[in-house]
Length: 119
Image (cartoon, rainbow, N blue to C red; front, side):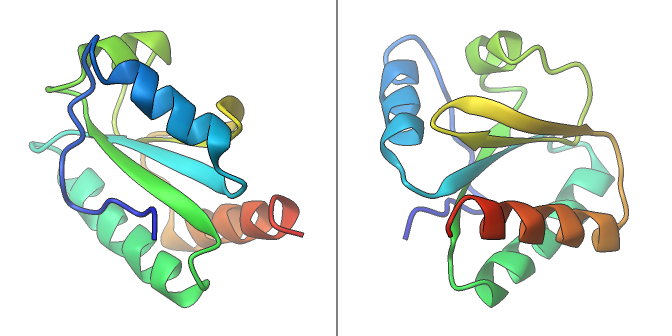
């Protein structure tokens, strides 16, 4: 299982390369979820993403990145607001969703990507 939930990933110069290689090696698509502890919408969305993940037979990987602890990766992906979700395949950004969106829309996007990238 490659999901990392409700645990900060602190990406710095030493482990950023490792994170990149995980994204490149995975056959599944990945969601990188940029959030902040002070953001109530972020905390609500991450719980919803976890529920979707558990209901989709783990067809994708989720990585949580707290923007307060990971300025290198935040800058690399030009993250300007939270929550922001990046849908990646082999480290390439396929879709970016910034700001608050409905659970229904988020569910739609995740289901589309889990079908596209795994079949």
